Length: 303
Image 1 (tube, helix red, strand yellow):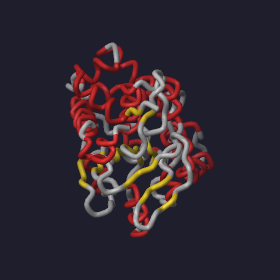
Image 2: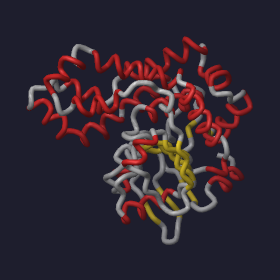
Image 3: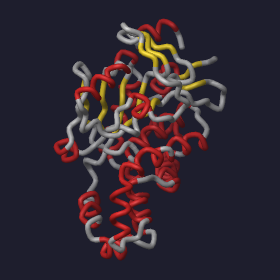
């Protein structure tokens, strides 16, 4: 990374990357376990509330560059966070928090962040007409009805439609435009973006950004699927109870986890409307070639 840019971005935290996000030089110096790309920073920091908190850096691009560590993170919701959790989170020096949830989700579980972190609500699903989240929650208490309504691939179809809406909804394009334009401003970094479980709305944001940066498709998909490692264990008791009451175990697994077909639906919608990731950013999000170049210059390191 360019040293001038390095100094701008990490004005409050000096970062030395070994692998990805391993050593923070503070007073006193704090050492973290070495993390490979995609590993849970939430677990490394000992913050049980955010097992899906991950650094976006460490991945190699097709051209041999590396996505820089310590600049942008993806996560699940920062609630509930204890005072000790917040103290641990302070160690990564966040400046901005981009919340992709709905207003109703935020009301129930508002983010709990270190002081000084600026909060931004970017309601991706503001224009969605479906009441699916509330309906799914109710069905989790009616396993046999859920089997009829959501079984046989129906739940997967609902999720694929939702992932297409991450590309097609006006509220989604406005929210992702704001997010990516903000990430192109070094003064606003380090930053985090998240939704409730950090897998769906967050999953498309991460997939789109990594793709624009030139990370190979298979790597982007592997990063997306890693949410299963961190979210499904959190809901294991719900999955087991649902199955014990006569429900099809595949239904809650499809709800609380992710599948390759989900992210593929977003990319298919993107290609159908725009053809390429560059045109999606330019025509869909209104981020022109200069804006895209700014993102690459900030987040790519040539080693």
